[in-house]
Image 1 (spheres, helix red, strand yellow):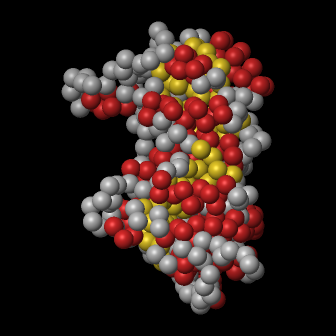
Image 2: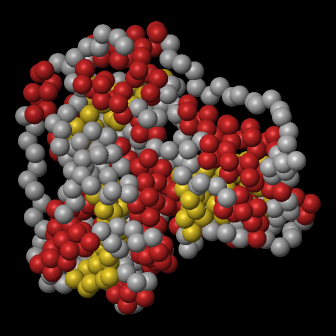
Image 3: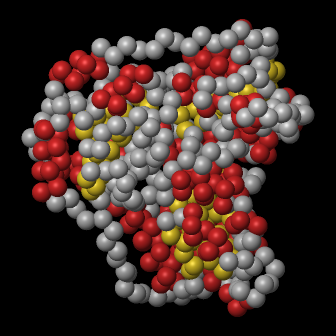
Length: 527
C-alpha cells in the first residue's frame, strides 16, 4: 500500500509540474518537510547565504526567463528577511513565489518563539498572501498563482505553511476553484484602438516589461513590423527589440536621449503596452491621448484604458488590417539632432564614467549586466545599447542596495551561456557580500566590478547639493581582494584602464568568478 503524499511533497511536485527548475533558499526547522520533498525532486535547490539574497536571485531569474522565480525560507526571522527583495519585486511587477514555514498551528497567535503575523507583513508587498491550513487550500492557492500569470497579472505571491500542516496527508479529491481575472478582448475595443492609430499623425509605443512576462515578444514584434510605429521602452523593457534597431528609440523618461525626449513631447498618441506608466516613464509625455493596455491599475492621465492580457490583444490586433505610421513622422524623428557625447572630466584617480564605458565595450550579446543602487546605474544607463531584453537588470522601482551580487546568481542560472557582469559600489557590495560563497561554490561566470570611491557617493552628492557638510558617508573599506580570495575567487585591484582591459579580457575568456576592485575618483553624477 503506497503512502499518501503529504502537503509539502504535493507542493514541490506541483511546482515541478508547472516548470519550476530552481528554488533559491535557506533551510530551517519549520521547513524540514519541504526540504525533504525538495531533496527527492528534480528541482535544483540553490543554497543562498541570506534570505534577502534568495529573493534577489529569484527576482533576476524571473526578469530574464519571464517565468516564476521561487524562493524558500523558514519561519520568523527567515521569512522576515525575504521582505526587502519582495518589496523590490512588487514595485517592478516581477513574478516570484515566496514560500515560508511558520510555527505550529496549535500555538499560532500565542506569542510563542518566532511567532509573528507573517501574512499581514507580506500583504502590502504581494499580489496575494496565502495562509495554507488544508490540502484543498494549497491546491487552490497554487492553481490561482499560475492562473494569474497566464492572465498576465504578475508580481510576488506569498505562501505560508505552519510546520505541522506540511506533514498532513494530501489524500483528498476536491473541486478546483477557478478564477476569471482578465476577459478576452472585445472586437469593438480592437476597432477603437485601430481607429485611434488611423487618426493619429505622430504615434509612439511605450513598451513595458509585462510584454516579457506575458510571453508576448513575438506578437509585439509582429505588431511593430506591420505598423512601423516608433518604440520607446520602460527601464525594465529595455532591449525588448534591439536598441540598435532604428525603430527603437530607447529608454523612455528619465535618462532618455534627446531624440527620445523630443519624439515623446511631439507625439499625439501614446500606446502604452503592459506598462504601469510610472512618474519617471511619464516625464516627457505632453499629450493626454494615451491608450493604456494593462492588467493592473489605470494611469490617471490615460484617455482610454483596456484591462487585457497584452498577448491576447496583440494577437487580435495582428489579425486585423493595421494602419502604417505616416512616413513624415519617421522623417521628423530622424531629423532630430542627437546630443553631443558627454566629455568626462579629468580626474586624478580613474573617472568612474570612463571605467564604465570601458567595461561596456567588453559586453556583447552574450553578456548580462546587473546593476546596484548608487552612482553606477546612471553611467551604465547613459552609455549602453542593449541587444536583448533583460540584458541590463536593475530594481529601479525600489532601488535596494546589495542587489547585484545575489541577482547575478539568478541571472547565471537563467542564462547559463552568458557572462554576467555584476556592477556595484563599495557601499552596496557589503550589504550582500556573503553571496560570494554561492558564486564560488557553483563557479558561476560572474565578473564583479566594485566601483570603489571609498564613500556612499550618491548620499554625499545629495549632501553637497543641499549645501550640508558631509556626514557619515566616508567608508573605511576592508581589503576586497583578500575577501574574494578567501572565497576562492580570483581578484585584482585596478588603478589604470590598461590594467582593466588586459585583466578583464582574461577573466572573460576563463568564464569563472572574478572580482575587480576599481579605485575611482569620487565625483558627482548627472542627475
